[in-house]
Image 1 (cartoon, protein in one colour):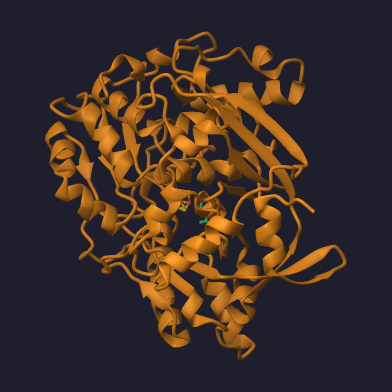
Image 2 (tube, helix red, strand yellow):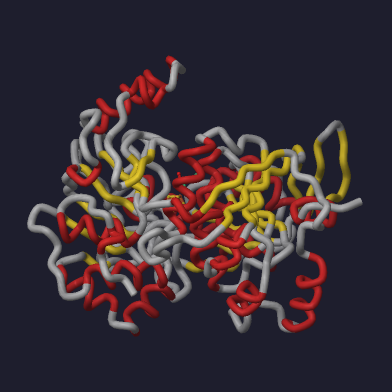
Length: 470
Ligand SMILES: CC(C)[C@H](C(=O)O)[C@@H](O)C(=O)O
Ligand code: SF4
């Protein structure tokens, strides 16, 4: 029977099936400080060990400060979670990339760059954006803390089989430097909605996807979760194999692995998906979110919508838009390019890799951050930071007036000192614009790295297609 890529990986990892649920074998378990303390406590209470310490990797990313790391961590919860992770990894024998490690970083950035993320594998992590790893043709699920404990103890996870969802993106973007992977995924979520992918694993396909680099594919898969999906997936190809070659944890018999991946990791041409959605890349323009979920997004050339227009007869949607506009302090009909911003955050597991920073630096080079804006760049990992510094990107950003930080989740979410003050408006390259996400009362506009960089310079959004970005 013809199978989708998802079905192939699923079937090759299924241990048993019972009452509609399956026990899946887990190839890689990634662990961070926020969702693991109770899981380790559970192991201790039940006198269990970690089944496969060699397949379990931990780092600290959510709570770590991104400024001077020699200073003590003042927040009690953060400090406790970081200490707990150190102690737990030591006690249970797990590899930890701690705050001083040259490999520390956001868990979804370091997995791929260390070659822990591999095609055809199952990967889990107590974190919703685990979907990022799907860019490598890995079946990667975010799991809850009780599942973290179960995986630590057994290296397996119990799950209901998701449905399959094909999202095909056809054609070429007119201006690929200005219309980025972030704009593609925001356009998709805007069209299918935040529940559009519920209960499914999305496979992104089509000419546009094949043309994306690995880092751009990660941006797409990263936000699958914002469309409600369980995971996002892209079939591996030569770019994938090239990217992973020679990484720290990539397989030793690399060529043999590639032969196997080439042979086995594709959706069969006659395989059927449960659901399909097709989008043309030609008409996508730079996107800016105006509301409090990622589907509340529009073209940079557009205006803030009228709630009744946005709701299209659905009273719930209309009410949601009214509430969002009130929180965001925006007036319907206002041009997106007239929205003035106070802060800029370039970072997060969506957009903090080397290419993101390189593209943003092109916009910033030789310019100055608007006097009304405070802007920061937070590389996704220490390795990204080091590579960016080797290219002189830090200097470009600092000369323009940006803060250049240590790696971590930072202002993507308010769990560390990098937060918005109430009422502050931020152009952010992260993935969630929920109320209070970047600090209580803070207002988030989701955008691409080039849009965020341009907003820092101009103090408001601009149509980045007008810039010379080549
Ligand atoms: C803290 C963690 C559980 C959370 C997640 O699962 O996504 C965080 O990473 C986020 O982005 O909101
Ligand atoms: S960068 Fe943001 S979205 Fe990604 S793992 Fe950290 S908090 Fe979650």
